[in-house]
Image 1 (tube, rainbow, N blue to C red):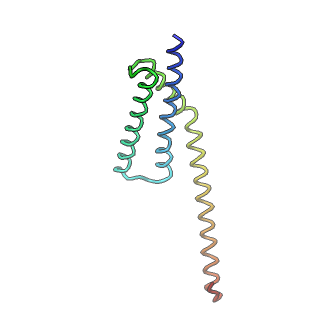
Image 2 (tube, rainbow, N blue to C red; image 1 turned 45 degrees about the vertical axis):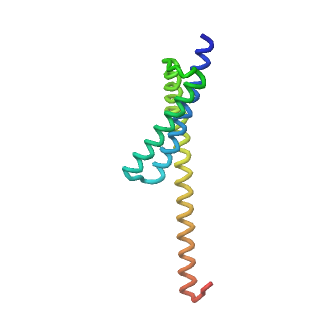
Image 3 (cartoon, one colour; image 1 turned 90 degrees about the vertical axis):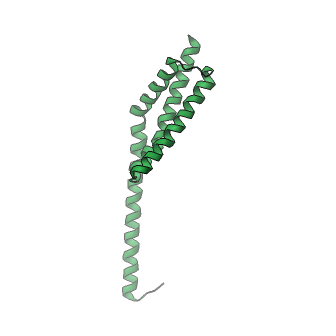
Length: 125
């Protein structure tokens, strides 16, 4: 029973990592608008990567046997991360991105204003 509990907790950790891996795609989609075909490609890449990770976990910790408690552990870990930590991580990164974008826009606007002023004054540097 203790070994099953240990494998359950390890599976929960790996389930969290699968959702963390998906957060990269989620953040990228929140930053940049994607076309339908690129979303499909990203989803296929995610599914292949997640499947390889799940098979590796099953092979490493459970001799390749598919057991309900391993899948349940991965599902619980994924749900816990997705509803607990992920919104804060994604939200923080989107917030920082928005602030950086705003600062860069202001810097570009200021730079263009200075350039126009210099051109108007006849200063070419």
